[in-house]
Image 1: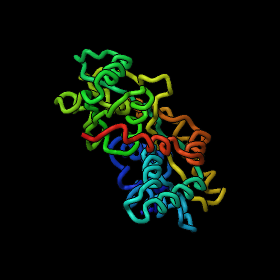
Image 2: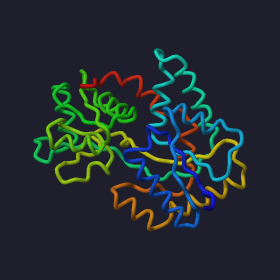
Image 3: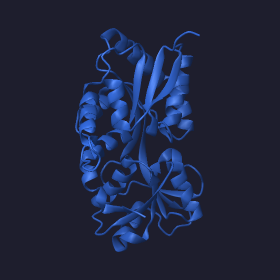
Image 4: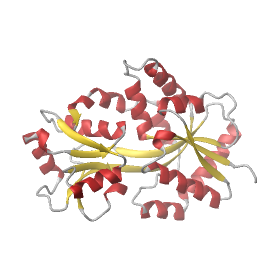
Length: 288
């Protein structure tokens, strides 16, 4: 069997939920473009996986790392970790290596939205914010079990000026959190659009005047990759990003395909992540 032209590595903890299908679809799209592609996972948390991949001096051909909005949120939290020995140092090293990595392309970028049960008396985001302000502990939010989702719920509480703790429950995926509305296990859900597509939910959008947060999936290469190989990988991924079948497939899954180019991704990975600030206010929400 001929070796893979592209290997996409993903932190094991981030290969599920909405990011996993995007990577599988990307691999299939690259295959159709004539580049045999496989998806593999890296053991450990986000920091350990990034260090393992990005610190290798011999980059190897066709090696890409998948990172997500959760990756940056995990690093921001770990950098403030005081109970686990070495966690903060690992996160700082991973962040430094990520800043030196070479952006290859963004695959998908989906805005987060709020939703309630279709028969709820809450009909828009302003009404939800008013309900939270009046009784912060009475709306139980369902969210994905990741740091990014918790940070965005904290940002909502902070931005809306809620005086009091808002409660949440975590689920194995955003889709499971959305299904919890039907069972009564949660009154509201914060998730990306792919998880909010079934008919039992009424979506509220993002209720603050600030831009809605986005959950994204992207690809980077090792710092040591040579210029010729980097150009080749970027060309292959850019062709995938512009392919109408790939874009239609993502939209069919409720996702928003990212535009070709590396500028937005470079800005995300080389500047301080917004999650650094959000982690400081995450205590404004409390797990149920």
